[in-house]
Amino acid sequence: MARIALVCEPPDGGAAEHVAQLARGLGAHGHEAVVFGPEAFAPALEGVVRLPFRRDYAHPREDARAFATLLRKLRAFELVHAHSAKAGVLGRLAGWSVRRPVVYTPHGFPFVGEMREARRVFSHVVERLLAPPTAAIIGVCAFERDLARANQLHPRMLAVVHNGSPPCGEVAAHARSSRLVVGTVSALRRGKGVDVLLDAVPAILAAVPEAEIVIAGDGPQGDELRAHPSAGRVRWEPYRPPAANHLRELDVYVLASSWEAFPIGPLEALACGVPQVVTAVGGTREAVVPETGLLIPPRDPQALAHAAVELLRDPQRREAMRSASRERHAAQFTVDRMVAGTAAVYDAVLSNTRRGRR
Image (cartoon, rainbow, N blue to C red; front, side, top):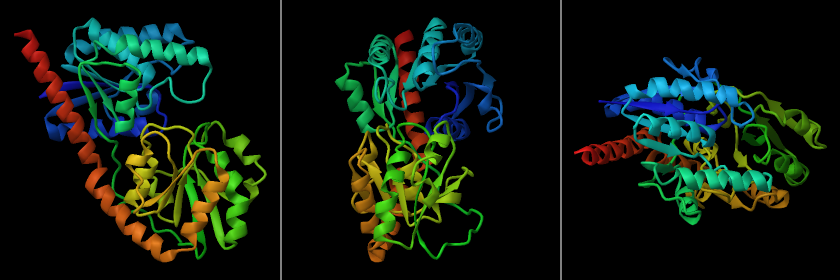
């Protein structure tokens, strides 16, 4: 059995859930996992080693304390797995300092998305410098692997392990609306395209007056979004985990992100059998296929409204997509499949490390 240190950042969307899934599931594959991360992880997982750092680089004293903690603790582990950009820097540098192999999952490279050019250049340089000694980079989709290659990031191993999500399962019964429901379950922050959905609301309701629009989520952009001209025509809900609590009442799921790596939201919609309308960004094409949903261009409320209305007006197509979505999730995007794929990368890295010491 190998001890694995999972080094992660403050929880933010799918990456945090991914780390929690690994922490809970690796024992079945012969590994013991311990999470090193901010205090926000502690309520959800046992045995978290708390690291006092943030996503930015404006708090060097916190970063230094986190790095010192890693240096003290990581010698007790056979392998380090760092998740997301800032943890990828601290985790890799600390792991190498104590001569441990390090695996890195970016969950979306930090030089992708809307940002100042100086930050983009800085992030790209950091990733280029840290890639060669990295034992493996795991892309959460083929798009992320290809992006690494295109940006000349050359670790010793480059693998793809798709994100996974739990089955829809049994959730508290809800009063199924007699109306057709279009909605999203999303963090309310820039890049997620919730404003694009709001822009599309008038066209959706003009075409299908009996429809209802639901936005479930919380986040830093919440006040701004609730001031949108269409906000009063939407039912707003705070996020109540698991996502299935919200998804199971939807007839059409929407994710209008401007950029993504491989978001978990569409996988959760697949699991719950909800037809998807998702922007064709990042690896979303690897999850959403014509049998399960529709892909649209980003930042295009007209295309979003057209796709949503197309599905709302075709109940037979929606029913076929429901069945195909559940089947696709069960075949390709389960948590067990993700954990097994990650464990296989660990095993290969550990085997290579042992051979190198002979």
